[in-house]
Length: 382
Image: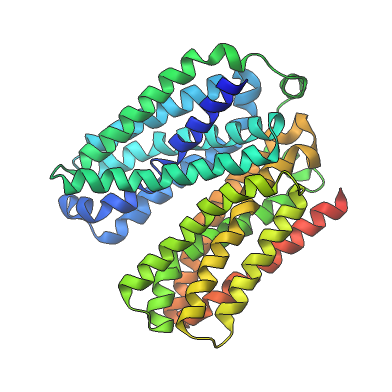
């Protein structure tokens, strides 16, 4: 069991590796393709759309093939897509390879999260998502090292692809260990796959979907607009603003490492409330007229507050909905997450452009209030 857990930890690092690659490499990529800098958004949208589709199919696929096979095949598809990125020399080829990239990412994310929620304690969920953060940090570092060394961005994608191929081989060889199912997974496998309409009709499903939607909207909107807000609204110089926007991501990663220990004492609902309270404190500091330093601290607090929310919502899903329905619910949660990621940061971009970027704390507060209300609604139903 400990060997399998080690492989799952490795898988979560692998999940994070490609996530920030496009952003890191795009300044070198778009001049080669002779497209506007904004076209990175088109590729991200294609990836996100594929991820939404495969997340919604994760229940059916996992019940038919098992978590081990779905994970191995999904990582293999992602490795194949990343290799495709590495040999692309035109924008339309990138768009084409983005399709299997997204399809591979969604299934493995939903299946692995459900497997961990069913079989392991909440502390492991926090630490595993901390490992995702390690992977998301390593990806741009590898790309940066490749570019600094004089190679092209293609080489960076090729290295990440090779790492994913190695992981695929490890997962294939580990398949017998995944087959040793516990009662909860056997119970899940015997139950019928649910349609999207049936999943949404489950009491509490809408609440948890909206809760997850709002959380991911808060996280991604902050990640995208923190630097611009600090620079344009607070007068922080661009370099300092960029470094403190990075502090938000570091806050999430470190926070999840610490939360693994706190989760030994607190329940998932308590962890989520703690995170929401810290996010609120960060937003409140930004809203009050305390100046530049306070805003920098506010963003760091929002990052720390975000840390427990995502893993604890996922881990509490089998408790709220039962083992037989948890994969279906986690699948729609992941889809909700990606919809929130796709829609809400660009929506704030429109608000910033047509009204004022100073409304960022208000925007985040509205999302936080809705997220908190939906979480409490879910707990009251339970």
